[in-house]
Image (tube, rainbow, N blue to C red; front, top):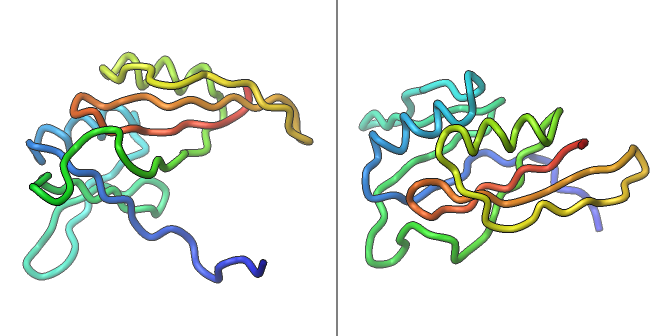
Length: 125
């Protein structure tokens, strides 16, 4: 299969309180998330290394919670990243799993934000 010619542009996260979630994700990504304003009307979201985290209100079609796709973020130090997310209030949901990788042992897990959404992290142990 031919690779896609473009990277992920945005991840939409549904929550009941957008401002509280923006603050939480800023803290959880510990200086890696930067608030940006896009569009007309202006929409505030977070940029994490060029990928937009679009925090939006949940509704009757898409609510918050662990019921769909999970985006995995690459981290340089898995254990430190997991501690950082748990320190921000995330709860371990699945894993961690250890994976044998040609570049060394990798770990991966899912944590849940305060609204039940899953965040995947993956990187060297």
